[in-house]
Image (cartoon, rainbow, N blue to C red; front, side, top):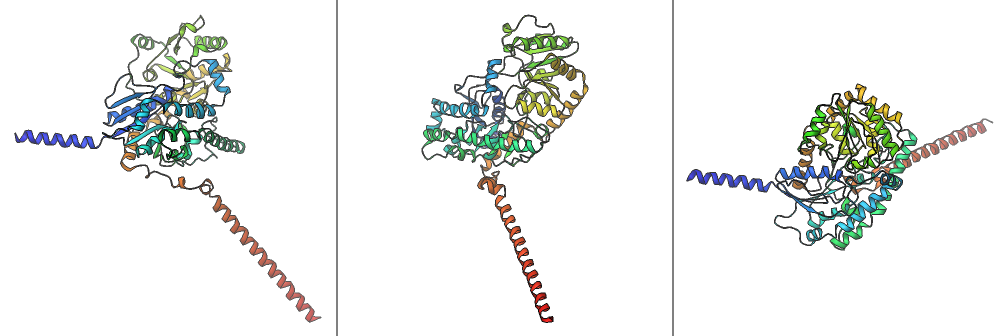
Length: 523
């Protein structure tokens, strides 16, 4: 009987301790890009497996339930970007102002429609109390109005970005950006910048910061409509973040100044817990006599929608590398022209990580999306990049500079350029050797990307949003740039020079006067 009571007491203590150390977290990821959600989903699943209770607002509910993970599905304010972007649609996006789209469509429109949803209205008007939320995690992209849930619940807010920070994101945590050697990620990467590059980098960054802030200022009214007239505005909630978790890493993105409030966890989404490659596909890959090339433009783009002359180039070049096989993502193969080479096998979905870690993979042809390229780097797979829009250009240029990729323009592709790229990536060993070195630096960390993110999430819950807050947030831009100090120093130097000049003039005049006086006495 005594042993039974003791056992119950021990179990009670263990249960109480585990309950006390678990938290309730609200994740809000309303933008409808599946590639963005890959990172956020893995973080929230990791927190749930750690024992925390997570509620996740997004257009992408889990296909396989996870304990402690509760989906709150909201409809997408924009068309879902999954296997539905055509070549013509891509050209239209490239012609338009991408920052204006991010601010107005992915930002203001998603805010306006998302906060009207009944589930979010319920969370605003009747916040859960048993238990209440301890933390809110919100995507850093453009729909920043959802950060207002933090002050509404009186809990800290963490931002999370699926890409390296865009120009307007650094100011939220006063992250120092040295534009002398760090190009913003809307520009093509350059290893070293000359004067004109630095000038353009400065002007481009300054302009798009003001441009983004101007267009998203409408979120002030959206916040106050739903959270109350006295709620903080959009710039205030942005600058009250506890920290930002960002999908970057110095081994890929280079060494740059950062505040402790920027937590780099590049590759967090690389969690190999998905299903296996279908048996027929695996057999085809296993039996490839000279290995295979993996070819996909991610979760959005339809390769089959490219113009006939581009597809003809692909057919001819990929046929030439046989017996090397090509595993190619084609969501709608019926749209392909006839004559698909015999060494190509198409698919509509594939567990990408399993393919990239297959021992016979030789290369990865990609549009340059950050998620897929980080997966390839993790498994040391050299790449041919065909960037289409957004940060894909800077990603591929960065990898080209590191000699782990080659770049081919998909719009102006020629037979000669693609033939050269394929032969170079497949038969020049330098790309594979360099990929292994970069992969080693990217994956060699004191703790995994996921464990790092979880640690800092729990840290913020324990200590609030003040410990990592930069004092620079309380200073004006000219104070941060020390313009007042430089002005004072220049004024002091000018004053000293003026005094010295005045003193010298006085002494010269005095000496001359003395000499004149002496001369008069002699005469």
